[in-house]
Amino acid sequence: MDLSAFPLKHLEPRQCFLSRKPTLVSTVLGSCVAITMFDSRTRIGGMAHAFLPDSRNYPDDAGYPCKFVDTSIRHMLCVLRRLRVELPRLEVKLFGGGNSWNAEQTSARDAPSFGSWASVGPRNVDAARAVITEHGLRIAAEEVGGSLGRKVLFLTHTGGVWVKKLRGRNGA
Image (cartoon, rainbow, N blue to C red):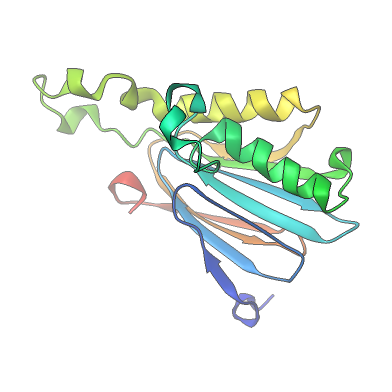
């Protein structure tokens, strides 16, 4: 399939994108996660790029529903319901959540300042799995964890996903 035939939408952290129109969505992940959703009947698909697991500790960021794993999934499901998508039909996929914090390159003096940041990738994955399950959905495919970043490409009208592992630090 010639992916260059489709308009390209690049997602940055804290962005979501849903479309009825065939679109190639791309993003680059380190500890962040991307959640894709696709309905084969309506041909509506979308992706969220979330970088923190839980919105509850960040009330000032309520205007950014796709910044957090919990609210990005709920936001996409809400929009899909309004578009008359039957949620049990959704094909949900999960990517990213790597450990992009490198303990070997951080001095002992700096390590405590990272606090829970060292485990944010696995916590993002856990949060995504929990919220997806909470809504009665299942994950059709996932590629998560590890120490390498990923570039993810998603076709909104087919649900097709391509993942390339990246060799640089922090997904670069």
